[in-house]
Image 1 (cartoon, helix red, strand yellow):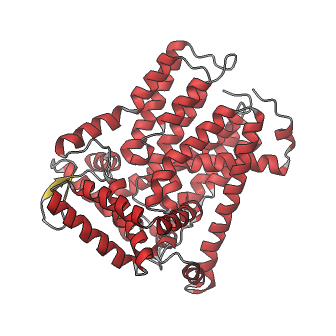
Image 2: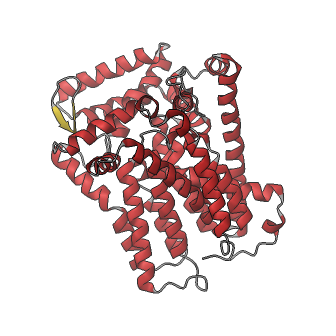
Image 3: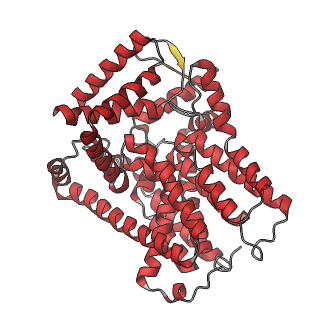
Length: 453
């Protein structure tokens, strides 16, 4: 354990208590009422869970044909968690309580990781920022896979940092080192079962390990463990369809979300009209070429984007801004007992006039809730950029590469959707970097006196 983390048990306990208290506030209001803790995606998770419990396999009913089809859009991790809870006669309230507990532990992981890179005060600052994140407070109280996915990634990062300490700081024997890295790989493969966005995290992690001179055999064991689920699940999907892929989510979202917005911007019509236009072309291509639905989505989505490069560029910029800065209002009000209170940031047009109208919609309070979150995230990203520069100047190049590439491989594919929720799996890294940047910007004495490993 690094010196900056030694004798920090009470500090870690305090961080855990703070994060737990903040995430428990909505519980006193919603009291696990299904109306307040489920959204549209939750219903699909519950349907998949019911089919798993009944022995029907990981499948869903097609809304058009009524046929039961194997599910390829979502990965099975979260339904398996719900199915396990059901088999143990545990209610959904227990699952949500466990989510709150796990997310509070993730705040402690944030402290440990950042303190390993810097100092206790820097780690504490980053962990407090993480604890107060509104999105984590909201989604830890919703039946969604994001919290468990983020926690699995956090556990993997902590194990990577602990196992890869440079000579003199690492007392682990070679066999112990390999076991720790295999466990880190298992954490990443579990994260992929929950959300496919974690699929490529093994790449920056492997670069990080080699940079720290970890042996090839240990790194190969880590990569093999990280790829365990992706290989198995891609093989399963290849057998039931015609594509070797972990999830068809990117293809479907490319066409029905991103390309639909590009088409609407190009033609100058509503997003609903754009979606209908793209969907009609997908259906036509599927019939004439007799290809799988997700292949048709990929083809039509790419064609639409390439036909309107200017509109696509504008949509990429607006999607990035929304994913990086968007706050929570609709689901925040929902978990506080006011379900479906107005649209979220991504549920209206994203032109400037639409955003201004949304901020003032339904009075000052609703607009202020969203405005504060957007401004807070702008400050966080600024501090995170400063943190990247600080770590690089310190000589911790491998940490910078790990953080930046991890953010890229998770967030870049999510641009086709452009939702603030999609940054949840890597929020720990965002706030970790912001903690480092904030400590440097504020000129804390402990930070200045730190000796770089």
